[in-house]
Image (cartoon, rainbow, N blue to C red; front, side, top):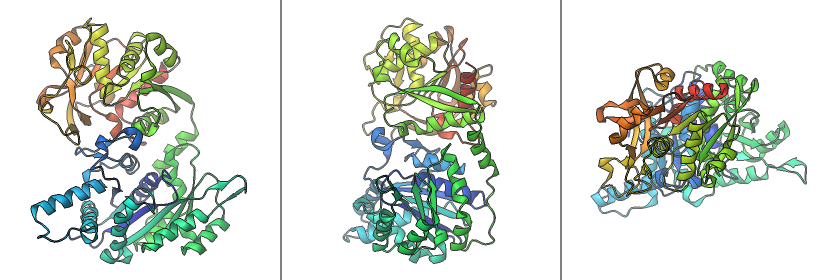
Length: 540
């Protein structure tokens, strides 16, 4: 694939340990460069052999982030979209599974003319091809930022590292930049920060032929100039290219400000020969940070799910709530509720006591379902703002059918195939599906809003496009009974007459969406439904 010769590539790797925040660094860098007027695209390379995270347990991999074009991707793409304020596509996520699947399909077709298929060159070339395809979005030149998942030294990551090593030769030194993120731990016994892990990590990277141009140092404590100079000396990087990144004090959206305070944009522009240099315009971003520093109070919202042991499972939900609370002048306090522990209305009363709103997020499987139904009932009966996201909408339908319509045993056929009252049912085209990966209703679909509803008030427009990830839909056979008893349809996918939004008439705020609005919220532009929900919750 031929590339525009103006395209630049930045490769971000990580060392010492996982969970250092490479995704936040990449997203922050994208924010900085975009604010300079540069065109930006991002790709995440994940070394695991799953084709995508769509069938993975959230406890293993966190949230599955869905793009407009229906790709099930790594949660870091959510960070990229929120920071850079752009809608990414399936070309922005690549896994080892995708690479090997594509190569094996080519081999079966005979594309390799009977040759032996090997990691070098076939796997490496396929990775490079996919990176170039992501860069192809930048058809008039720009910067592709590429995050390599995992940690330098991981066996499964070696093909990706070899592929990015070759890029310098392929596209030229002035078009390639390597950034390495490492940890500088503080040892309490010695009362000092230690640079040795960073030195070893860089040594590992250099052993495979990659010399980092910039090293970013994650630390819980301030990093002084003597430490930067020591790392500069032993890792062969200019002192100004050793950049500290301490833990943020208020919100993760401080990260671009902290990185730019060390002139990251000038470094990148100089190393990639980007001329003329344009100062980043981060004023609007600074306002977000200022909001976080000047809060009136905090508001406590309950998130009731079954993966609450790993908050990353619901990270877009949490960030969407934060975006809205920030703009309303409040800090967010999340009360995590494991719905497997809710077995009665007494449990619900005890667990939700004092919260200003309840969110039931998406999910799959029967575990914890009855607890979610009790959560929805508690919110409905006590006039507490309730926001149901995908499964959370289906839950409120099941609860309403059982306890308002009197349809005993009403359920989703996902949880009870033989229920007499399938208020939620499998989509017709899903009934013959066997494979689980990428076979759901995925991506953005139109939703027509109904006048005089909470949804219409929140969006203040007639037609919106929202992202889906589900197999089951509201059963229209029950629509008339629902609406007669106060549960109204406020959003619909007209082409197929599918219910998209339901809300309860006369309640303070009781609304569910078949889609996932959390995927489209931005720190400088909160999602309308989350904003309306939080506004009512704060006044509750």
